[in-house]
Structures are given as structure tokens and as C-alpha cells.
Image 1: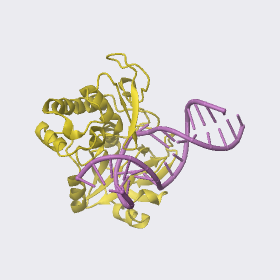
Image 2: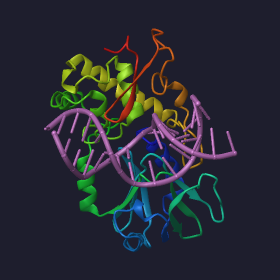
Image 3: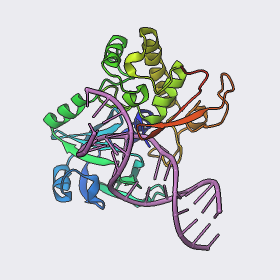
Image 4: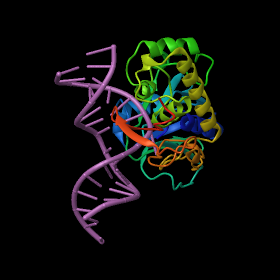
Length: 273
DNA sequence: AGTGTATCCTGCAGGC
DNA sequence: TGCCTGCAGGATACAC
């Protein structure tokens, strides 16, 4: 479910409730969400305070004292919900991990499909993890020249290329498809077939669509909820994603759905070449 | 190296 | 009502 804009919205929503909180105890209800045993996971977190909440690509990161990093990949249906003491939330339908905070509150990781993963990292593993990811598209290191060069090195379809987190961090299927539409580029074209103008247009389209989606607090197709239980408002502003057979807003041609790389892509066959 | 496929898992919508 | 199929914001592992 969550791509960069949804992860960013979650991070912003967690900062207030979690900054300064301390983890008293951790209860793992779904061990398959972890890369280690529940016992070790809980031990690594016990007594640690949250210094900050941030994001790397689609990952939500709790920076803990020690130091340590709790890195949460939300998969398709993951969500994080802070609860006040004795509060019950209707969002918590499939709790996977409960972090009990000093003072009686909780942070619940909820995940219907359990494709998410929670990992505790040290300085070294966190640096390695972050280093494997590409630049942040809304950050200062997303350079057009690097982007163009990186595209030129691959002949994989551009939509699939955009989903590779080593190339650009945080782009998922929705925003990859939407960026291709805005750039007027057929998502099936090989990355190295884009000319410099097209590469620049796509670069700009990625930044634009992600920025607009962050301001709309993300896209809720079905499951996504921010920490307050609210959905995102970007759904109605999607121009092709999920709009098979509906008219393209620019030319009126019905939107096509094509499947490759195991995922659906949507495009206007007239506007995207 | 890239690409197509399958896998993890659950829920929901649509067709019959 | 019920059963079946297909589909879903992600990430990986495999054979070719």
C-alpha cells in the first residue's frame, strides 16, 4: 500500500505522539514480520527512547537512543497507530506487533497481509541498508544528470526500473505509473531508450507527482490509513492508475491496462509514446 | 544482467 | 447464499 507519500504522512503523524516516548515492553503477535526471533527483537528494544521519526524511501524509521534504528517496511497493508492509554482503535484489525510505551500508551503495527517487515538495526547495518537504496526523490541528491546516467545503464521497462528501490527510493507502482503518464512516456519502454529530454521530463514528473501526493497526504485505494486513521486525498487526482477504460483527461482516449513485471500499469495509448 | 514467474498472505469485488 | 477467480500501495528468489 504505502509508497513514499504515504510513508511520509505516517512519519509526520507519528512525530508528535512518539518523540520522547520510551518502549517499556514489546509483544510480537506475528513473528513472520521480523527477521529475528521475537525474544531478541523485544530485548533489542526494551527501555529505549524514541529520539526522532524519519523516513528512507518507503521505510518508516524510529531513531532510538543507544543508538538503534527500528526500520519498518509497511509492505502492502502495513500501518502504524499510536494509542493513548486505554484507547482502542478501529484501525487495529490485524495487530502484528504491540510496543507498550512507558506511561501506558502503545504503538501498534497492524498488517492484514503481513508483507511488511520490522528490523532493529545498529549504526553499521543501518548505514548499509540506507546505502543500498537510491537517492530520495524529494531530497537534494536527486540529480538529473545521475538519473539520466542511471537510466542509460538499463534496458528494463521504465516502470519496472522506477520500482527498483536501488535506483530511486520510495517510488511504487501508483506513482511510477502516474509519473510516466505526466511525462508522456509509455511505461513499457526500455529505460535506456529515453532521450535526455524525456529523462529530464520524467525526473520532473516524479518530483511533481510525489510532492503533490505528499501534500494530499497520500492515496487511499483501500487499506491505507495514516496514524490518525484518516485516508489520503490523492486518489481522485490519479490520472491513469486504476482508470482502465475511462477517458484520458487530456485527449479522451480510453485508458489501457497492461500487465508486465507481474504488476498492472495504466497508460493513455495516445498521449504516451 | 534482465526478464518472466512464483511466492509470501488476506480480503474483497464480481461473475455465475 | 455460496463458490470461484482475479486482483491489490511490496520485495525477493528462481530458472532461463
